[in-house]
Image 1 (cartoon, rainbow, N blue to C red):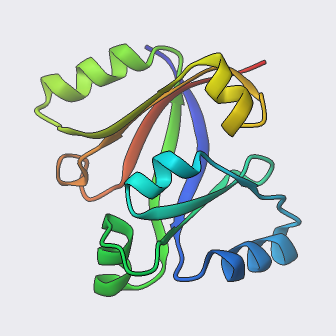
Image 2 (image 1 turned 60 degrees about the vertical axis):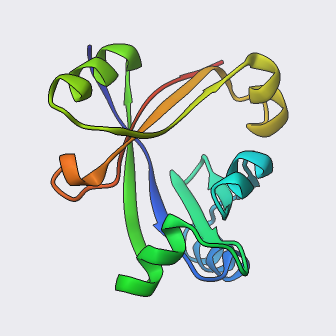
Amino acid sequence: MKPLGVNRVTIAVKDLAKGKALYSELLGATFHPANEADAAAMGIEVAMSWDAGIELVAPLPGRDSYVRRIIESRGEGLIGVVFAVDNVEEARAAAERRGIRIWHSLDYSQEQIDTHLQGRFKKYKEYMLDPSGTMGVGLVIGQIEPK
């Protein structure tokens, strides 16, 4: 397995519209919606800025979620880093060998990539790791191959 660098950071915000406005003005970031059904299933809404390398996540009103609990306990801010690797299954196996649990995974088909990620990739597969096994870091490992 070979590391390919940081793909993006994940920032928890109370209000997605305000977060998008802030980072658009500060950085010139352009935000796109992510898969709303996947996000809603986790009690959150998501906006992605591929050009700035930012994923904004906000709790859905009236829903419990890991994002809501993080914001309530420590406030808004950086909650995760997505690292790209050339072989995500090798990275997943390494995490499992260390006893690190997988919290959530995504493995999009090309149709899902085209629909939810603006057709930017030929492969998009991620594993969100349990921060208790990664020294408190909200670590996501992903094989994210641009077209």
